[in-house]
Image (cartoon, rainbow, N blue to C red; front, side, top):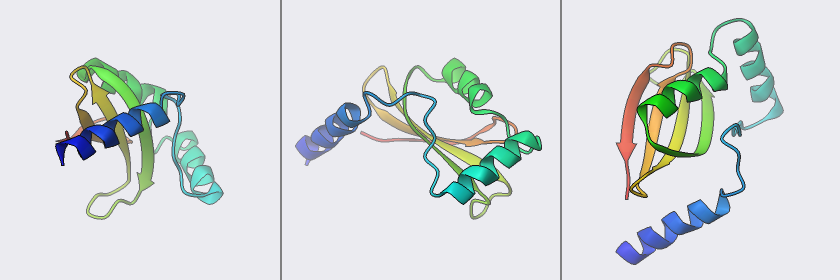
Length: 109
């Protein structure tokens, strides 16, 4: 089982090695337009500002970023950011998109 986890982590690393930390995964064009409007209206911070905070608090490399609006149980927008740390551990960091406050950190193997 540990072999499968290691293989999965390696697959993630290899598959995103050409991915820029500026990439955002958004489900549809409509969602993309909503996100741009939210930035322009001042509802959420730009990705650059969010990543400045993440990079100052977590050592490692950003693998993926997912922006969600009206997340169940939360009000407003959240960024789910997947990071591989300096010890090759995957972390999912949930960040309030309006304030850059880290809401949770989930570590994986």
